[in-house]
Length: 254
Image (tube, rainbow, N blue to C red; front, side, top):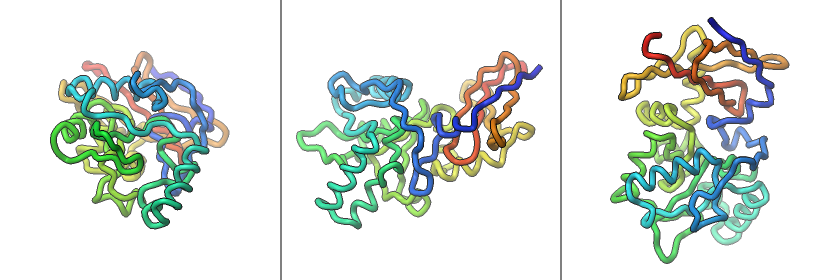
């Protein structure tokens, strides 16, 4: 048995799988549900789920003292200030590489975090987060719980942002694992999922043997209708472009 869910098309601008870049600005100025990522840094905030999972990962690998949050949620006004200050201090070429334009920054979603090694002097724009030690341990563990390193060197031409070892984005599980295992940028993943529909879903098997299905539903004219199996555990996220990504957790006997 199936049930039909009606979704307002404005909700394509809500969710954990929003693509925010130079082509697609962040339109939903939503600060609800944000909490500090660490009690020591009360002004650095993320959406609640992302903040809780970030703290869980840091505790799991014993990195609470060695890895610190540098920048989380930013308002459009804050992003404007950071962009303009960087133009003055670092010049146009550097700023274009490392600082997103206002309304085009993932930090405005409350689901992106810059992390750095806990040092006396931390560069706000380019914090030190090397590919070794505890930082690389975080980088390897993060996709198991919903975070991806967003800007890698090999994807610079696709993302439009230079390599940022310190910038992580919460997209949720299993998307973080799929993106990492397939070696995709978020831009590529959003397009990849468009190949899968309600009649031909992408199937992902977890390490425990559970099956998760993912597929794309384009937005309708006025609202979007999505059919979901009765009793199924599911999530629906807008992609910030033209539709929704549905994630279904299937029962072992289905």
